[in-house]
Length: 71
Image (cartoon, rainbow, N blue to C red; front, side, top):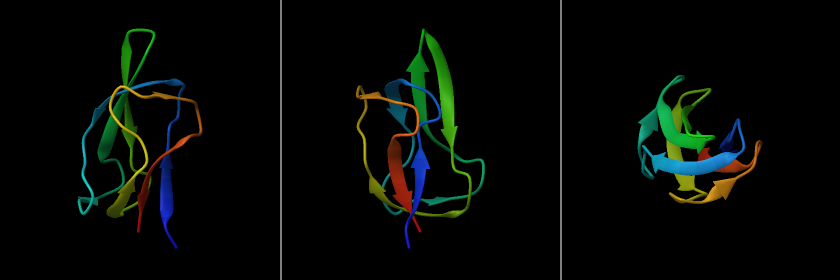
């Protein structure tokens, strides 16, 4: 069953740091969100392989919105 990495704040996706097939470990920065002119890294909470990117750079996201799936 796929696990999900979610946005921890409301903001804009400034940069996506991974691609499908990348292996991540706990603490790996997978994206950077921008909110109120501050850049906030989104980190993987577990290890796995990115299977799906559910967002794109420049997109506005809400807190709790899924950004990536990984297994």
